[in-house]
Length: 236
Ligand SMILES: *Cc1c(COP(=O)(O)O)cnc(C)c1O
Image 1 (cartoon, rainbow, N blue to C red):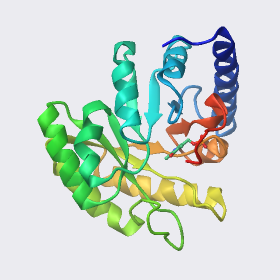
Image 2 (cartoon, helix red, strand yellow; image 1 turned 30 degrees about the vertical axis):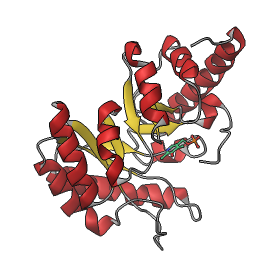
Image 3 (cartoon, rainbow, N blue to C red; image 1 turned 30 degrees about the horizontal axis):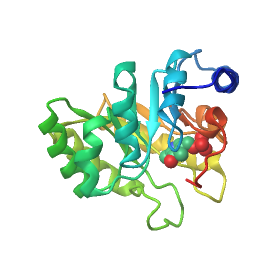
């Protein structure tokens, strides 16, 4: 994993800028400094970038696709990072994801819960699951996410599974419409979830373009890729 000093400088500067944005957003929302955790989404970027980020103090990284994610996590195993699966998980890939992920942000259907539960039990260390909520007023197939009405039943399934731990909720702002409205809705879904499952207080929302809006509406985790690493070669 060789990396140029130039790339290190670049990542240090962009990471610092994102951390400043996050601190400013926390302050603007009247929240404590450090109340919101940063997951740096490294998908499509090389393991050498992950190593540089670890040197710069990053401890939580996000990935989205197999086999890239598993290979990168294996290459970075010595760095002591916490790995987040932020993208969609195909049911047949659940076991592969459970080999490297500490947290899966995109749990959205009973079949996936069952597959992850088997994999979590097999690895002997529970897998943290966030329920992805579809906030689109007209849900789009294939974008992922459970509609809010399906969240309570899905939460009960995760909470009852031996191999899984229910962490909270996650969402991506809809492509159209007001992200503030969407994140406000997510906050309501999160409050209902915590009322039934007091340990499940994580709210994963906010990306490079909308982290301030998400923090204003109660996000506890933001998932930031391009603002730290640069524009991705692929469009995902
Ligand atoms: C890629 C991705 C991100 C990061 O997006 P940026 O706009 O690059 O910050 C966050 N969440 C999910 C679910 C993603 O797929």
